[in-house]
Amino acid sequence: MTNKQKQAYSEPEALKDILFQALYNKRFLLECGHCISFFNSTLGNDLTLKNGLNKDFKVICSQCGY
Ligand SMILES: [Zn+2]
Image (tube, rainbow, N blue to C red; front, top):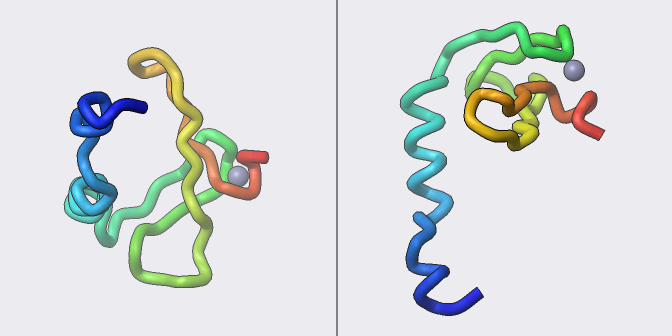
């Protein structure tokens, strides 16, 4: 990746800010059937996003992501 290409990407903190603001204290049923609640437990499920075109991406827990 060139320096110019690299500059097109935001830092991880920017993504964390977006996710934190959108998801804090919310609970969801995932496409794999497991549940997730955000940022209020270190023992909860982790989230895996399987990338896809537009809304074809999948949201599943990390255990089912393998
Ligand atoms: Zn799962």
